[in-house]
Structures are given as C-alpha cells and as structure tokens.
Length: 379
Ligand SMILES: Cc1cc2nc3c(=O)[nH]c(=O)nc-3n(C[C@H](O)[C@H](O)[C@H](O)COP(=O)(O)OP(=O)(O)OC[C@H]3O[C@@H](n4cnc5c(N)ncnc54)[C@H](O)[C@@H]3O)c2cc1C
Image (tube, rainbow, N blue to C red; front, side):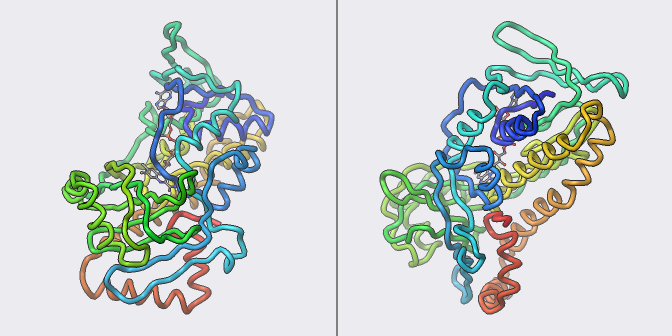
C-alpha cells in the first residue's frame, strides 16, 4: 500500500495501519518539516487518537478549558466550558510543524522523504495494481500498489474530480500577546467585517495567542501592511476590552481560503483522505480533525478486510459509506458557519447576539453547539 503525502494525515494513517499490522509506504516530497506558524485547534477526540499513537505526551499542546463566543457591538455571548462537558479540556492548540514532526516520527521506517509522486495510474483491470510514478534523488521509479491513499493535501490526480470554489475572504493570521488574556481560554468573535478566532499557546515566554480573522481580501492586505501599532489598535477595536491591550505582535501572514471537495473520494484502488478529500476554511478549525477521522476510519476498514480484498471496489465502497455523513457534516458546518458569520445586516446581527445569549440559558442547545463547536471540537 502506498500513501501519497507524509503530512499529518498521511503519517497518522501509516501509524494507524502499522498498529493494525498492515504495511504501507509513505512517499513525502519534502525532506524535513518546514517551520509553519499555523496553530491548529485539536478536538478532544483527535487528542485521544494522537495519545493512542503515542505522540501526545511529548507534543507541546495548550489546553482550552473555556471558549467564549460573542458578537461585536451587540448584546449576547456564551461560554463553552470543559467542566460542563465533563472533559479535562474542550480541545488543545498545537503548532502545525510540531504536530507534523511528531507524526512523522510515528510513521517511522514507512516514511520515505525526498520522494515526489509525479503520477498515479489507475489499474488496467479490476485485479491489477495501481502504479505510482515517483521522482527520487536516484531518478524516476514506478511502484505498484493494491491501494493508493492520496493524502497530499491537493488530490490532483487522474480519477479524482475536485470541486473547488474560492471564498471572497482571506485569513489574516497574527501571532500576538494580549495584556490580560486568562490562561486556558479561547475566543470566537463575530465582527462586522468577518469572524475571528483567538487561540491560546503557552510558550516558554508565557501565554501567546494566534488570531485568525476572515476578512475581505483587500481589507486583509490593508491590515497586513499596517505597522504594529496600527494593527494592534485595529485588533483591540474588534476584540473589545475583554483581553486588554495588544502588548506585542510577533508575526503576521495572510492565506487565501477555498472550499474544495473531492467527489468521489474513492476510485479504482484509490482512496482520498485529509485535505486532499476536503479543504475547508480555517476559521472553524475542522480540517485536520476531519482528516484524522478519515485516517482512523480507513485504517479500521482495512483492519476488517481480508488481505486479498485490500483496495477492492467493495472495500472502498464500505469505507466511503462509513465516512459520508461525518465528511459532509464537516463541510456543511464550516461553510454554514461562514455564511451565518458573514451576514452583515443589523437585524441579523442582533438575532445572532440574542441567539448566543439564549444558548447560555439552554443547556440542551449549548450541548448541541458543544458537540460540533466553534473550533471543530467534535467530542
Ligand atoms: C491558517 C490555517 C489554520 C488552520 N487551522 C486549523 C485548526 O485549527 N484545526 C484543524 O483541524 N485544521 C486546521 N487547518 C487545516 C489543517 O492545517 C489541514 O487540514 C491539515 O494540515 C491537513 O493535513 P494533510 O496531511 O491532509 O495535508 P497537508 O498538511 O497539506 O500535507 C500534505 C503533505 O503532502 C506532501 N505532498 C504534496 N504533494 C506531494 C507529492 N506530489 N508527492 C509527495 N508528497 C507530496 C506535502 O509536502 C505535505 O507534507 C488550518 C489550515 C490553515 C491554512
């Protein structure tokens, strides 16, 4: 079996397969994990999977005990609380590069770095293997596989149709420190310009935060170009007084955002997982969590399959059935959250604020929000 792409999802898949006694090779184009400032919100269920793989304890992770959700300039807010959910934490934040490195080490000898996949040829008959063309330091090679798992974050191979649409927003990412942000809290704020998430990160230098703000592209670029004081004042105005002044801006960047979905997600001797299967807007913090659940389900499906049936049409159909509702739920949730968050009319914003206030009064509704919460904290 060949896994194309040794990102977090591809390596997690290989590690899960190894635990089930199934051999796979992971082909990764890069030779080392590049520094990446992304802070990923990790759901409790993902933390459990990472712990089972033995890569949680050494991972620098910051717990989120409370998530405060509010509407800028309107009454109404709600706080999601780990104690109320009966959990040690609602979720955690980790650096993408720390997570990628931890999972690479768990993939072990299965991981081959510096190997770029240049083509995937479907099988010529139902019994034939698929063929994966690669470029290595020693030249091109072709590898035969009973199943090719595409986890390259893009899914741009024959037999995969990707439906993509760019959002009219960019994500502004800012690493910063607030004057009085309590430890263990995260914030989701609906602002008139777009939704914002603020994730905590405990570092040797104290508590820092990563802000992700979905904005119209020209506004994101204008904020990117501001000096530190100008950007700090703009963020303070949008966040409100709760966290105090911005003490320091450490880094900033923008990312274009799109929704891309592979349809179908399986083909002859082919399964597509992780970002290659669904690339989501980062604001809801769903992408890795959903991709990891793809890997868990695929490994479980393969563990239930007799070796001769690995990569068969029946096995792949069973995997696709197993994943359908969660995958489409994640896509619909993220896309829906963005639509609701981007309504700008006064009455809708008032209703959004009142809705948040009502959530604080209704334990049932609050639990429902918790179950697929603002940061993808799928419990
Ligand atoms: C700003 C931002 C914030 C985010 N926040 C969150 C969050 O809070 N929570 C969350 O769950 N998700 C979040 N995400 C999404 C998350 O980063 C992705 O869902 C996750 O990284 C997907 O992992 P992956 O392994 O599928 O793909 P990737 O991380 O893209 O890895 C793909 C790997 O494949 C390799 N590759 C590519 N092409 C080839 C080739 N031809 N041959 C060999 N190797 C190849 C690449 O080098 C890479 O290592 C965020 C994303 C962004 C951009």
